[in-house]
Length: 228
Image 1 (cartoon, rainbow, N blue to C red):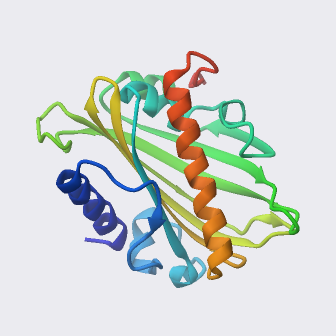
Image 2: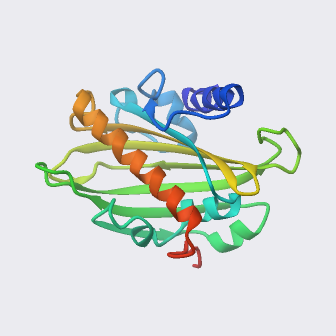
């Protein structure tokens, strides 16, 4: 089992034991290895051992379908206006069809900008894909859906702030008609990530994203847009 898979498994076991998880923490073990990323087929890449991991996990007041749509939506800048200075997402598959079916993989490319006080911010390109699988949910029932998604960079960000590498993994599991367990982990090789202040700021940012997602779960607008 890769480190990424082991991290997800550890969090799911904690959820089963305690019925919930803290909003954010450091990923156990910290960095990734080249073996963890072999499944991505990226070829020669920078040494991922310089990354540091962040985990955000929570139970969202959302239907599984809406939570999944929020994750893959094209209008991210509209959904999260206070968290980015720019965001454009393009699909390389028909996401609407994938979400409506039991099979298939949705793929996208996101170019987004983040403002970092003092440093001036950065613009990066994140490649992502996700699929729904069945039978792996907390209840163990054959028809229980689980949504799995990953994201990764292929080249460093541009701008005044250094972001060399980023790797994400997300898991969503329904726990009821309007309750979804959401686990998000990101490993970053970025300026100051080993400093406690910078790490704390990164963690706060991802907590803000999770809180905003919870707000969107309860709101009718803006709605996630997944049409081609």
